[in-house]
Structure formats: structure tokens, C-alpha cells
Length: 206
Image (cartoon, one colour):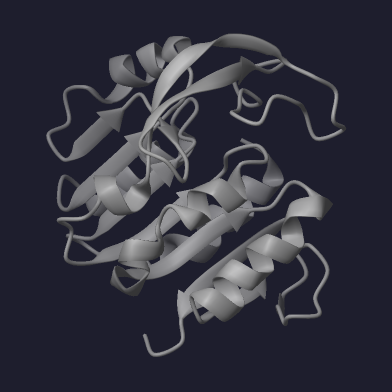
């Protein structure tokens, strides 16, 4: 866990309450899932979603015995079906876009089931927070939660690619009507803002 993640956890700590529903998209080795578990203290519900089968196996070893943690080995995207995923340089950088953040190509690692969040979470009445760290597939994940966005109070989003930022900004600010803040630089994001590395978005009326 790096300093940015530690800062994020401090920031969201006061947002999480007993009994909340939380979603960890791109759970990797489970740092956020562990934090969510400790905050909820056996209450509420945690969806912990990881793409890579090998990393997911480690995730299951850590959290399989907790009844309130739902472990899911799928790719979160804007489609329900099957897609190719790609092997990064380590467990933190596997993704579904096929290259790293400098556009160097990754090798195919196989196929995996993909799912939209508005399909996965359709029966949830309220979702306190969704954390999204998906190594360049942020726009795909955001497109796939269109049907449940009104149920979500907060989205913690890591933004990786400059070329995707205009679409991401359009989705969260214009399409979804969210209020977003640049976490690292501590200012509100507007439609003219350049890409933040991490942003926290929330419903304006919540």
C-alpha cells in the first residue's frame, strides 16, 4: 500500500458506517477489502472483485470465511459476457485494456467473464461507496454502473490515462450529475479540470 492509498483510507474512514454496503473494484491483494472489513466489524456487505485468477486465489484465502464479504473473480466492464484480460508486470497492473500506462502492450492471459456493476448490484437498495482501481479501464466501469448510479453515495476513482479523462469527466459530471474532488490537490473538479490521479465523487443531494 502506497502513501496515496493511506491518504485515501484516512479520507474515507469517516464516510463508512456500521451496516454499509461497500464495493472494492480491482481488489488485488485486498488492502481496501481488509480496511472495509475492519470498519464494518462483521456488519453490512462488501463486494470484493478481482480480475486475475491467481490474485483472486490469494484473496479467497484471506476473506473466504467472512460471511459479509462477497468474493468475485470477474472483470468489471460495460458489458455482460466474456472478454480477454492481460498480464501486467505484477498483480497490481493486470487489466482488460491490453497495455500499460505508457501504452506498452501486454500479453494475453486468457478470457474471463465480464459484468456490469448495474447488473451485479441491481438488488442493492443503497451503496455507500464504490472504490475503482482498474488500471485504465475506468471509463468502462463507469459506463456499466449507469443503472444504479442514484443508489451510490460515493465513488473513489483512480484515473490513469489522459486520453480517457474527457469521457470520464463527461460521465461523472454531466451524465451522472456527481460532485467530484481532486483528492491529492484538494480542490473541486470542474468540466475544465485536467485529469486528477484520484478523485472522490458524490451525489450532490446526499
